[in-house]
Length: 114
Length: 110
Image (tube, rainbow over all chains, first blue to last red):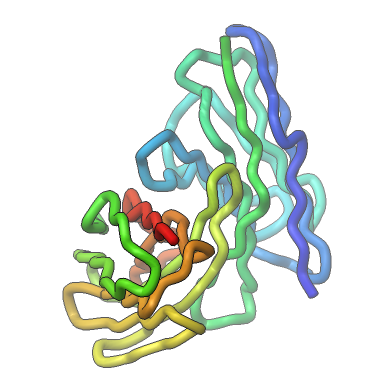
């Protein structure tokens, strides 16, 4: 069966510091990968998605970037964090071989920028 | 732009008191409508995919239905463990993206 991991689970960072969040998927090959942010009381906002190694699409221009160095690894980064980057970050995967895009989420990373 | 509106924002139920959650959507050609359950501090858990109007899916005390403009999630005889936020999302044809609603937070009291 497939498993998705995210780390760290929680992170407290000062404004202006760098960020690196990691997501890995087990038990599947060539998945679609996604990064979402969830603000309190709001829906999930898609930040980035990837259909393959090195292929990244950005949905929202902002202070963040994403990379996919390996087939099942997805990284979310920032060079300098802003207060507005605080939130709950979720990684998700879907099977490229299926006609419908059910997405399966990881446990999330709670980021607080102070 | 795809839009998803969920109502009510919050729902408080007594154990055994059945109710329904609403998800209204506008999308340029629906590929799929998805329901998720999210517990506090955790990632969303996939529940159902609905593909076409008239379709119904069931899982334990949950039943999801779909029309051309909205979907309902019916909770029959809920238990306290059904307490969670329920999220609805839509996918348009030719798009990878899911557009999510803000969710309905359900609290079931014993």
